[in-house]
Image (cartoon, rainbow, N blue to C red; front, side):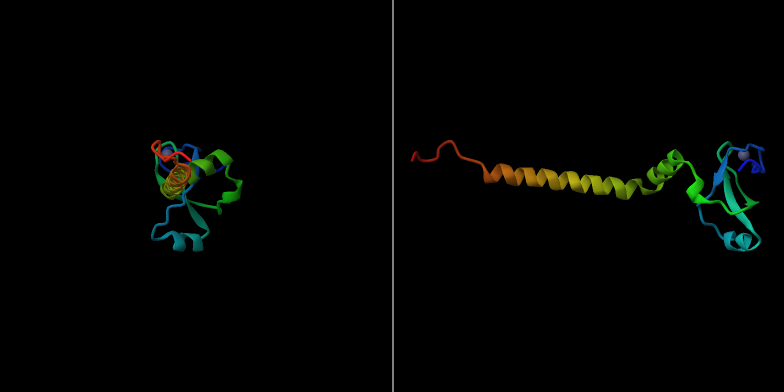
Length: 103
Ligand SMILES: [Zn+2]
């Protein structure tokens, strides 16, 4: 997107804004889509539909981490607890008390 520049600071370091705000649909009807400036954080509209598939992978990973961090960490935490629980079960299943009667 070389022709895209921030309306406030003229920086070209802008990305498509995924934040939904009222008025986006009307602007989309006019062929304009929301963008966010990485330099100053200003949200503005510019013509041209952003293609999320063309975004670089690091940015997509950053977005994933930013928006899906909570559920992702919950999943990891749940998995760790499950593993711990299974380890405890394993330990209990193989536990032999020291004072067990001799055979
Ligand atoms: Zn800016």
